[in-house]
Image 1 (tube, rainbow, N blue to C red):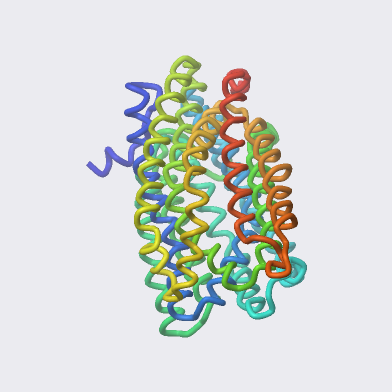
Image 2 (cartoon, helix red, strand yellow; image 1 turned 60 degrees about the vertical axis):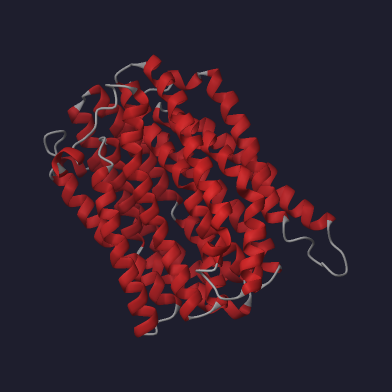
Length: 457
């Protein structure tokens, strides 16, 4: 049974929605596990260290996400190539894509560690990070950067395995890593008293283990591709295609992370409690976003395999059915979070004012999760077909030209003697507006159908 579940899935056969659902469910569970990484970190920090430490982790996350954009881009490019070559049954191209992806990731890790490490503290100071949380924030980022290879290789290896149609194995490795992360979190923080740095170290170790397990799994899939030193040597044809496809996805994430960093500077002005409230919101928000990102990744693989097999009508059919599934899942989870939100937020802190503030701000975002379901699903189809540029432009417009100006605009217009920085809700209102606009734009560009001409030849 386990062997059948972990075998690559051919998404070019059968009823589209059934294949998409079967492929997505392990990813939803896996994303729950991945979200538990951040959630457990926040619970342990909030309960054992305090609200300021919780704020420190929150201030570090936008910067850490920015550092990961390079690997997200590589992973996106490789995932698209793997799914299309797998669908087209091109064994040699598939082998070189996988090998070159691993090599490029190693080079990127070395460059990133060398460049980012000395810049951590200056960047935090530039972003007006409160003095009370500056040291904890810097320690968290330093450990995360030094251990970046674990995060990077998990992204690339899980993307490859999913591109081959196996989402179950990735789930198993995530569950193993999550358990390890939880145990180490409690040990490093509650027993060893390492503080915020212990949380970062636990995550790095857990992700390194999941990367090793993913690599072992990949090495055993030799019936679908060849795995050896020959394919690790960079070949310009595959590296260029990887960059061409992955760069827009990486830039999309970079744009999003840049906007978060700019908005984080505004957030920091509202003080430690508001920063902590945003951390709580992000953790709960992660669960609301799970079906959206899961269906987006599933539809990328679905589109890639079917475009590789030149089954364009089937891609369109799957886009409609997959998007509907994503919206239904998102609606159910969003409803549950609204009903039980206060209880969920009370897990992170015993401070009642912080719980109330977090829940009030979370309510502003609720409708937006449905909009993101549409955006992620249709963007997944476009990316899987090879059109990674259109989602990038949509992200650029909605984050840089909409979210940031709206956030700062509301903040400026609502300033009073009692509220010198304006209303705190400006952060959530700007995010909601950008999500809804993004969904509308994605539907329009998807209907143009230009993604159909972007397949790898």
